Length: 48
Image (cartoon, rainbow, N blue to C red):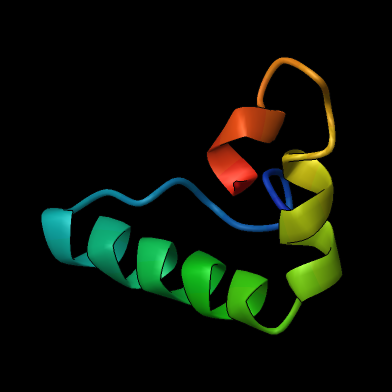
């Protein structure tokens, strides 16, 4: 949530694509964070 206000909103399609790639690459280096997203009972089936 802190990162949302740290940068300006993308104005063009290419800026949006670059911001999306940056975010997803950052998540690739945080496997514990991604794993935690599937810890709740309601979405645990998706991790199996």
